[in-house]
Length: 190
Length: 213
Image (cartoon, rainbow over all chains, first blue to last red; front, side, top):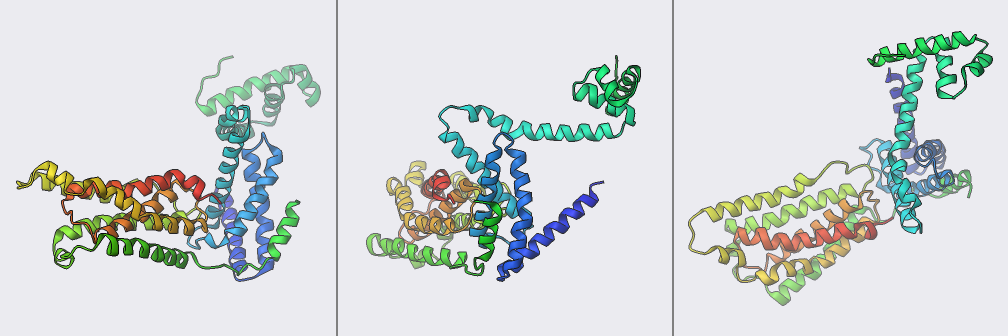
C-alpha cells in the first residue's frame, strides 16, 4: 500500500542527492534547485512540530538552509541525504526549543513542551487514522458521522446541510459507528 | 529576510571552497598537540630507562593496548559524530569493552597466587599522581580535537564531546606509558581508567557548549 509512496519518496531523495552532489562540484544551478525543492519539505517538518509558534517556522527553515550551506562538507555520501538533512533539522529544532526554554521568563513554554514534543504528532496521527477509517464507510454514514460527531452539528443542522432526512442522519450515524466498531474489534452498544 | 532571497544568495556563493579537510585538520592539530605532551614526558618526567626491555613483555602491551583501544574507539566514534546522521547507534558497548577487558585481566591476576599484596597492586608507587597526570597531559589534545570537531557538525554534542575526550585521554595515556613504570592490570584498570575518563566526562558535559554550531 505504501509502496508507491515509498518509491515517490526515494525518487525525490535520489534527485535531491544528485543535485547536491552536482552542486558540490560547483554547479550553482543544481544547488539552487536543491535548496528550492528542499525548502517546502523543511517548512513542513517544522510546521508539524511548531504549531504553537507559526512565526518561528520560517526562521527555523532559513536557519537550517544556512546550516546546510555552512556544513555542506559534512555530508557523508554513503548516507541517504534525508538522514543528513533530518539530523541537521532536528539539531536546530532542539537547539531552538532549548534556548526558548532558557530565555522565557515564565515557564509557559516549559509547560507546553510535552504537548510540543508528542501529542501534536499523536493528534495528527489519530486524525489520519480516523480519516482512513471514515473512508471505509458508505457515503451517507460517513457524512452523518463527520457532521454530527466530528464537527459538532446537531442532527437537524446535518439534515439541512445534506438534504437527508433527520432519521436518515440518525440511522447513518448508528450504522456507521456499528461498522467502525466492528472494524476495530469492539462491540458497539447504543 | 525572504526565504527565496536567501536561497538565491546561497546558490550564488561558490560552493567548491572547502578549507582544510577534516581529517587533515584533525591529524595536524592533534600531532602538534601531542608533541607538547610528549616533550613534557620526555624532557620533564623522563622515559623509563628499560622501556625497550619492557616492550618485549606482555605487561607493557596490556597497558598500552588498553589505552590504545580507548583512543581508537573514541576516535572512530568522534569521526562519525561529526557528520549529521552518521552516528545513530548506541555506542555503550564498544566504549565499555576495553574497560571490561582490563577488569577481566585484573580479576584474573588477583585470582592467581602472588607475592604482592592487594594494596600494592592497587596503589603501586604512583597512584596519587597517575590519573591527574594523564588528565593534564590530555589537555593539548583535547583542545585540538575539539577545535577540529567544531568545524564539523556534531548533532549529538554529548556523544561527540565524550568520545573526543576519550580519544584525547587515550592518547595522553599512551604518551604517559613511556614514563610510567606501573604494570599491574589492577592499577591500570583503576588509575589509568580514571585519568582517561576525566577528559571524556568533561568533554561530554561541555560538548553542548564547546561544540555548538
